[in-house]
Length: 474
Ligand SMILES: Cc1cc2nc3c(=O)[nH]c(=O)nc-3n(C[C@H](O)[C@H](O)[C@H](O)COP(=O)(O)OP(=O)(O)OC[C@H]3O[C@@H](n4cnc5c(N)ncnc54)[C@H](O)[C@@H]3O)c2cc1C
Image (cartoon, rainbow, N blue to C red; front, side, top):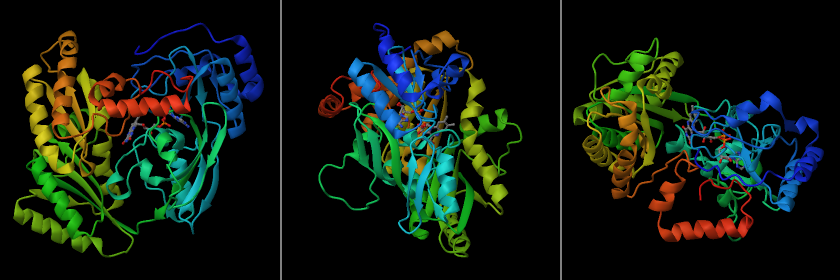
């Protein structure tokens, strides 16, 4: 366990006061606690004196005030889909779940905005926007379970960032319970507000270390009327960069997603995921799943066909198939979404969620592949992800001939050479999954000292007692 600094058990007076503040329904007990203390990958087993689920913003504020008065730490939890352990308490914190704050408060089609509780799932927020004829564009694989408060606190990305931005770009205002129990109502729907520091941005990507997000005003978009999805075969990541640039220019910025997958990645999908098959006959070294969308009907197909023909002639593209139905488009997306499951049976993995400027991704991949081969000969590189955002999920699989123990022994070397490669291109060692406990020590080593000092100063100013999600991020 990464940070199991246990201190004295929480005073029972504090736990009794919390129980009184939320009522019996607000305390989760017995075997019902287990799902809150176990995260997807089973890497960070949780421990806590209390799992509490307040039913209103006022109840959250009461719980936080009691904790502040008794010096009791809190780990906020949304849908528990985070991949870096940030949502798991390690003994000295109570776990505060936002699951009962689950109402869509208001949808305003004219303002292209809506206000939701933090515990509304991402899928429910998308549905509410759809019912009002609008689009909430954030889309990630965990959208059925992750919550708006969680995607805000991790500044989640996903497959539509290229067109609509990540969560930071989709938040207009926030409501937050501060570490002293005060409620900050910053739920403005304004697109322009230059009245000093834009405080909401401290909590977006804050991973619960500065306060508890209880509500959010979110930006909505017009719903696209038409989508065109293609599956393309390419020679190299360089070809992908050229094709992306051409596609953006030729379509007038209509590219919504551009997902890159190496042959080794797709080979695992075809091997381990039943009923999956290659949409292209030939085995291209790289493939891209590209989606275009438009608010006007009947315009995309011609544009896409013409740009594909030009790309073929320019050597940026080797082959492509255009989805002829929603079902075919969904079958392309299934290949992309099942990659994590396809890797599961393949033994030990070093997982990296890195980003670089888009044009530098090919050089990063060449550098990192060569460096990994030196420290772990025969390692299988599974590289895929949101190429349109320069965000690559770079996973290193145990060589088939190597024991698990030997592979464990070279993990630190693999991490060092991958991060050194990303540093050479002024990239980021955590593009969208955040820091939590998994990357805490890495950012301390790799961010500039001035950045870490500013982060610590902000933390001290807002949470002087260090009670909000201690041991995470910083
Ligand atoms: C299958 C799958 C696919 C995924 N795909 C993507 C992807 O494409 N892009 C991406 O960015 N991520 C992805 N993720 C990661 C994860 O889903 C996101 O990080 C998500 O935003 C987490 O939301 P959550 O509600 O589950 O938060 P949790 O996991 O519960 O918490 C995450 C962090 O936020 C804090 N937190 C949660 N709620 C609050 C709150 N209300 N106030 C303050 N702090 C809070 C927690 O303390 C913790 O530090 C994926 C995960 C899975 C399992």
